[in-house]
Image 1: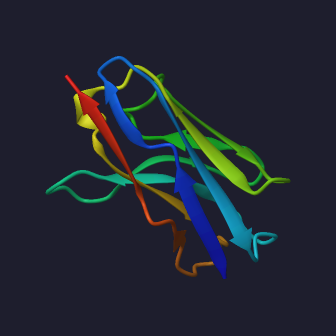
Image 2: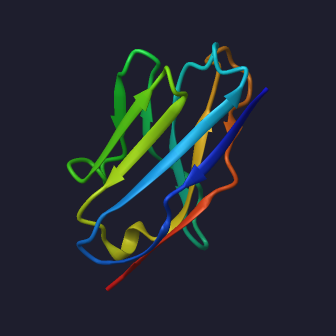
Length: 117
């Protein structure tokens, strides 16, 4: 089992920046992929960014060039640096981690990001 705890959400004006952090604990040695999803009101949860244990990254088209994901395997943390935020980035952001073996991902409790226009 893995526990994930997010921090860093909040309210920011359009064009501003926020940094989300996620700390993993428990059986983290086998964690493969980690990253972030988000869910806006009335919309489905969508992948924002993911990173493999080796550092390979992937991003949603809507955040490419604005968001950067990074990972520290020694500290079991993953960080999402969000720049040039837009009102449409407003959502609850969820950290996830998985073993990459077909089992379900582990999820954090979510952190609210609100971008005002």
